[in-house]
Amino acid sequence: MKKTNELYAGKAKTVYATDDQDRLIMYFRNDTSAFDGEKVEKLDRKGMVNNYFNAFIMQKLQAAGVPTHFETTLSDQESVVKRLEMIPVECVMRNIASGSIVRRLGVQDGMELKPPTFEFFLKNDALHDPMVNDYHIESFKWATRDEVARMKELTFKVNDILKQLFLDAGMLLVDFKLEFGRFQGEIYLGDEFSPDGCRLWDAQTRKKLDKDRFRQGLGGVVEAYEEVAQRLGVRLPA
Image 1: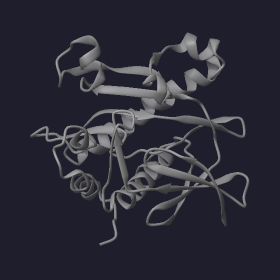
Image 2: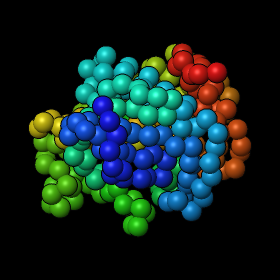
Image 3: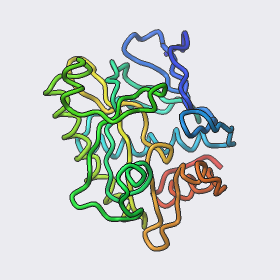
Image 4: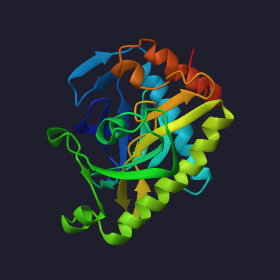
């Protein structure tokens, strides 16, 4: 498989077309950003850690019956994925209140949410990713009613799988975001799953092990990502 032209450059990944029209190469850069790109830095090893972390999680989800776009790692910072027609909404699942929901609703940070809370957000940096609901998504033709139901179903399934996976490794899965797309008429999980797109706390101390370390200037960002990977048994190059 040969890489051809660059299709898209996001905050932390670049996506390339290939000579296979149904496959893309996803390149995990060392870039790290927060606050809609207002804070940006390059962190050594981050792209590599996220690439292998994402591969590990996607394979766990596939083994549990969740369809994902991931196919194989190609190098330390590259993976081959199916070419999805992405749906422009983010599915956010919250097990514990933290981040934007605390600011929006004035609830206590760290409050356990029973049942877990599900939210949709429009993927649009210029609008600061506003919250939307099922009716917006259907009315604006971003997805059909059946696709909305499928995205919800898969998000709750991912939560059940990963919450236990992280808990077994001594961590709390606080919240996470997922993105989905279409491939050959079916809904697949796309984008990535890494500490960039979720909150993870140590189960005993509630030490932050995710991108909040970057957002809040706590330092040790990549070291925290590597700790999470090590606890899960993700194999990283020395």
